[in-house]
Image (cartoon, rainbow, N blue to C red; front, side, top):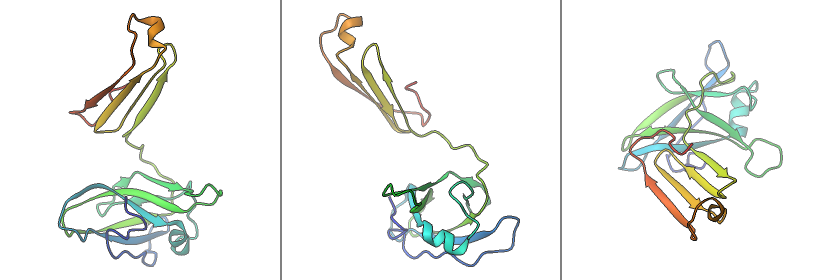
Length: 166
């Protein structure tokens, strides 16, 4: 994960541009010679608020250079009730720099599900997955509904990026 964009190199929140919603532009750079897919980018909330006084955790969104809305989230890292960071993801080619726009506007895009978890009470199973791999741990409750007298773990490496567990 990119903490405050330090791994991507220089990044600055520029002066707001004229538009419908107040906005600021930031630049993130991959200074490494490798591709970085879905790299987490963290922008200090204080930097967002400094440039976008109208931004709130409920009214902030991130756009890529083509104007497409990216999934983003404001987080309180230390649980003190105060936002600490604005998180979003970007994919970068080796040594590529990209501009992103942060707007003081409510998100409109529905986030794409990349993780899922569930507990199955009768069997006492726990299953969870990301967009790349899935796991299941068999609990002792399975002994009551099946003739198996063991526990175990399943691991699936996925061919698709969609949820499959549920």
